[in-house]
Image 1: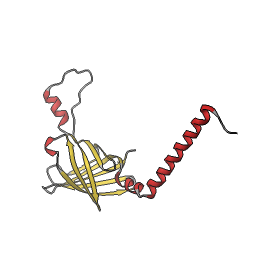
Image 2 (image 1 turned 90 degrees about the vertical axis):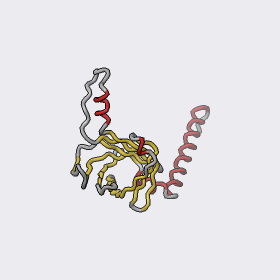
Image 3 (image 1 turned 30 degrees about the vertical axis):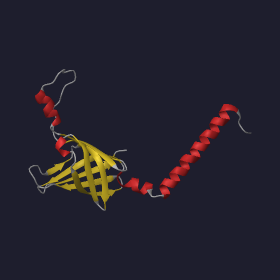
Image 4 (image 1 turned 180 degrees about the vertical axis):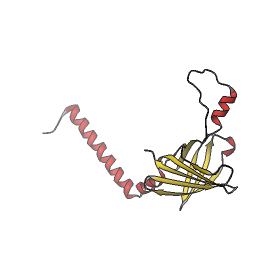
Length: 167
């Protein structure tokens, strides 16, 4: 028995929208879009940082860092090192304490592209204004829900960050 009135119209509109969404998803998957998205897209939480060379080599497991990839853009926010505790209700804090709380904070965002196993990030925004416009090349490897990004700087210090999927 066919519905009539507003309920029937709402149900038909819902079914039409559902069909459109399903057709769009099938087209997306057939076009290879789902495969491209599976490469890096999503939110990744750092589990470990391994630094080889330089002044502070070591394995760091207490890492506060997250990188988020969309189809063409990324954003990363990290805190490496000890930050001072600022008790709640303290009111105005000193310039020295404010500076100390941001010394270990790093953030940047921009566009990226992938060439084979190379991840090339183009900084459009950065916590350090001198980093805006920088291009950073790294090696990456994704295995299921894990992502490893390895970068070697001009001084030969290699940093390998191991991430797990956060979403």
